[in-house]
Amino acid sequence: MRIDSLCLDFWRNYPHTELSFGPGVNVFYGDNAQGKTNLLEAIAYLSCAKSHRARYDRELIYHGVDHAFIQGEVWDGRRLVTLEAKLQRQGRRQLMANGVRLKTAAELSDSLKTVLFCPEDLFLVKAGAAERRRFFDECISQLRPRYAVALAEYKKLYEHKTRILRDWEEKTDLLDALDDFSLRMAQMGSILIHYRAHFVKQLALHAPAIHSQCSGGREVLELDYQTVSTIEDPLAGRKAIFEGLLAHQQAHRQAELDARQCLSGPHKDDLLLTIDGQAAKEYASQGQTRTAALSLKLGARELCHADAGVWPVLLLDDVLSELDARRREFVLERIQGGQVFITCCEEGEFSTARRFRVSGGRVVK
Image 1 (cartoon, rainbow, N blue to C red):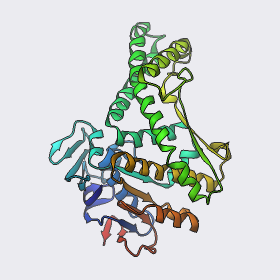
Image 2: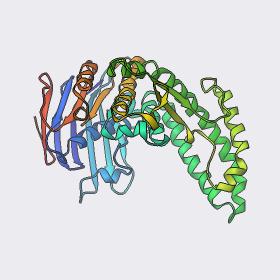
Image 3: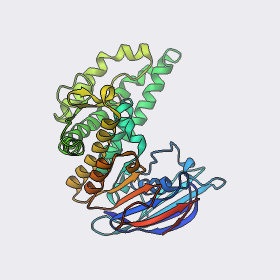
Image 4: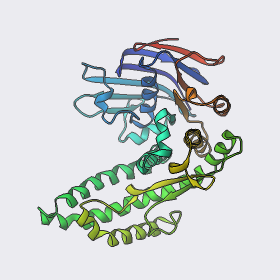
């Protein structure tokens, strides 16, 4: 899987640019704040229609313009596909593959899968559970389109139920719909938990081994998926998960009414990371944190390859400079195979890479 070319119009700080890439390592280098990360962001957007830095699409549009356009020529492992995203400052975006409008953003990942590792990914280890759930969602949505659909519906149901719980004392008739929303959330939630549990099971076959190699065999990384307490085995069938969710909802119904918050469901899930038996969130050093985060992302890359039979496009945003020499060498050896994009300040020693100098929203090969 690879992206052969990229065309941008009014994307971030790029009025217009057209680029062609090599099938191996591609390096964007230049001073800070010139637009290197914006290029990786555009490639990632073509795989999931999301930005890791912006909450709204309007933030991705060139200042003073009301639209933006991305086009990528992609080899999906079987055929060439033209992916397009048209963004509007006012109005809905359009996503297309070979000229056919896509119904959901999840369909993009059929043609282009990416794994992005950026400095912010250190929060995967040290921050709250929301960061690790985002990791779940980004990875699984590209591998399982059904998960992406269920996640989108769950988020809508969560918003509706939250409004009911927030306003029910002033509008008591809202309670008539509360149990219906809870039931539907349990149905969608059982899908999320099912896929998350199996994802962690597979990721545990890759990430700990990578962590051990990267640390020189001195550390042991372990992963443990945590969901609602009434689900004894998240790897069980969806029926058992659904029943466990319903039981948890019933036990917390009054607490939710009192707190005016959704307290029950997979929106509380977490991934517990331990290094040598100690919780990484509390006890990991800076070096251990980097290694654990890197292992999760490289593990997700290898899981994708094992699952889909093709390497996803790997996007490394200014992370090699943050690693010591041994870890840097390990990463460069580990990324052999598949297409890779790297951003850095210096041109570096990428002798076989295709290099692009980035300056002020312009790119020179």
